Amino acid sequence: MDLFVVGGSGLLGAHVVRRAQRSGARVAATFHEHPQTTDADWHPLDLRDQQATQALIEQLRPRMVINCAYRKDDRAITADGAVAVAHGAAQVGAHLVHVSTDVVFSGARVHYDEDSTPDPISAYGRAKAFAETAIAGVAPSAVIARTSLIIADGDSPTEALVHSLTGGAPGVLFTDEVRCPVHAADLADALLELAASARSGIHHVAGADALSRYDLGVLIARRDGLDPGSLPQGHRAASGPPGPLDVRLDCTRTQAVLRTRLRGARQFLAPPTS
Ligand SMILES: NC(=O)c1ccc[n+]([C@@H]2O[C@H](COP(=O)([O-])OP(=O)(O)OC[C@H]3O[C@@H](n4cnc5c(N)ncnc54)[C@H](OP(=O)(O)O)[C@@H]3O)[C@@H](O)[C@H]2O)c1
Image (cartoon, rainbow, N blue to C red; front, side, top):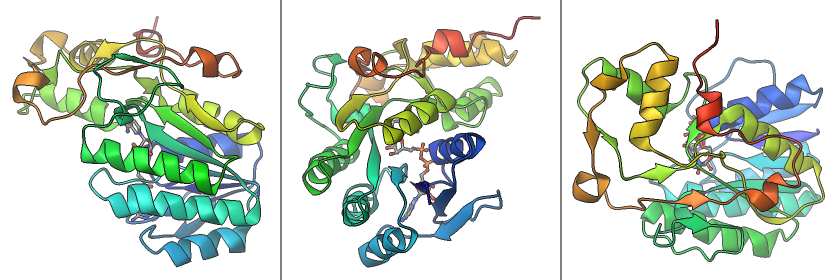
């Protein structure tokens, strides 16, 4: 087995599976609640069962593992389950790429490179930061790939939200919450490159443009021929759930070692030219 994708049934995992297969790799992948029918070697897995997680990796003995699985509200999956994946990968000598997030940062400094120290302010951010540290201890050759908001040609929750808001559904897009959105295909290609490389440690893999949720919504609406003027604005600082506001991953160092271009949202959401 070349590649084992944990969380292959998710938004990012599905792109990783597809793009790896397209390049000729033999791919095994997992699902939890959403069984898949595409042509890969699919395995059910609950990361809360750490023994089963390690046993599956030992059975498959992949060369590379990319872990895209998480649940925002469940530390047993996001942190402890991710550490079990690292133990399994280390056991069979597989090169692990663990997907992490920009919300390991509070936003107090706005700009963060790979040397910045995590200072999470949400339970999710704390679980991801814990996983990063524990995985580096268990599997020192692992890549920790921090990313940002994932957009995917109509498939992402962010795009679905924009569509529903233009249709009059309740909700707002925050003008004060800024991220560096990345296209799922760019991110998948970058993760596959990192998995196949000899690199280790923290890597920042996000899009080149920093945008507010609202400005991102406007780009999505324009691309999809919807009325951006119908998108309601709001302030997360005033009304949203607690969490980081302005977090921008500086990807300069990682981009310099990748062939994959991490496009900015202004480029990948540009309306199609006729
Ligand atoms: N989405 C974003 O905008 C964003 C931003 C920054 C970082 N990230 C990071 O990117 C990664 C992928 O995110 P995503 O948006 O692709 O996630 P997603 O679409 O929610 O997919 C999550 C995956 O985890 C699996 N999963 C859930 N519970 C599980 C369990 N108990 N045991 C095993 N697998 C379980 C799901 O399987 P089933 O669906 O089959 O249940 C699914 O394959 C995560 O590490 C996340 O922290 C995402």
